[in-house]
Figure 1: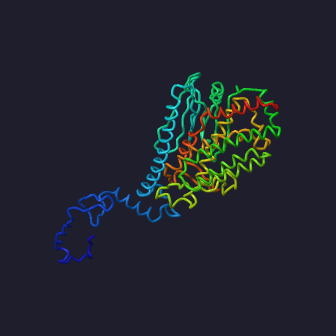
Figure 2: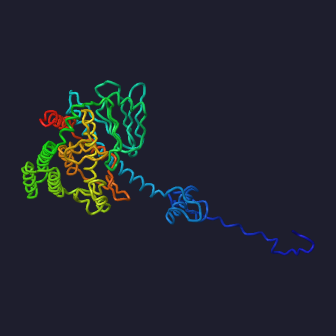
Figure 3: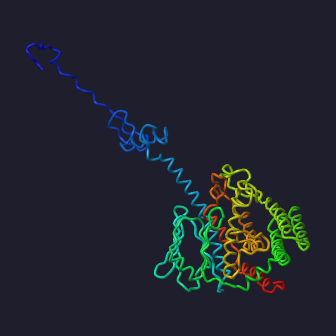
Length: 451
């Protein structure tokens, strides 16, 4: 601001030289998206403000993926992290679809085998959100979700129709079952079974219209005499060993297979000389040890990517005893977990058949009778176990497993993939075979001269 003391000079009156015009390059490449753009400022590196923000966010995530400890956490992952997570989910979904395709093939074979005969097949449900409810007088069944994306399977059954299932098996404990659906299943004589991932039968809701055969139960009590009980137990073990010998043809020819065949045949011949039930149990345990030793020759096939993520003893069949519990329960090996799951399904199947035929499951002849234990079911399972094992050998030999098929809990217990559990539960013993074993026992009891 000029005032009376301002001194004017010649320099202040001169005109300033014109400002030089800055020249920018015609095009540059964005450092984030790589798109070409024409810069309008010095040192411009991005085509737009959004690319600049994305570049800053990616740099922050690469430096500290979960944000700074004292600042707000970054909510969005980087592009690479998201792609990696999606790839992992895709691998699990592909594996679920792989086992689901085999399950559908087994169901198709069963339906084709039944033909026009009156054979009802079970329905197996698994995953999150299993639902059973009644809508307009019909049973509406929804299968659960196990992976994404997945098409949910639904069933609708009307009362007194030929397509009603023989039983409904729920694998897991996630879902809902209404009271009116339980009443509907009881009226239609359709049992409901719930099995957990460890292979334990959690619940079994059977029909209330089971047979109350007092004559059969009196015969069961009368047959608990040592002579009669030992005769029944010998027949059950003999049928089991004969089934194990038939299964030996599934294994490759070797010296161990012939030795196992010779040993099992020798045990069958020595059954008649057994004097007590305890000695018979020892003979059965020795035969099972020789039989499952042959299973150790099965080399489990794993994908190259999964071989680094599994224990060393998973490449072959281990002993039947679990390293967690020391017994067959709570399996720590994939093959033992598969066997336990198949045996759990067989147990529920035998239990349902016993209740429908009128047996008292607390009266047994081979296993000891204990409080709150259905020992007769374990007796009748013995000759049926080789039928289950015969189907499982094909699963172990003809498939290449991945690390996503099994999981290890913090206690060391092995858990199966949901759809692998569904496939194992589908490989059950035909109901006609179960009925045949129970019918043989019933005829033996009713026709026994010592009753």
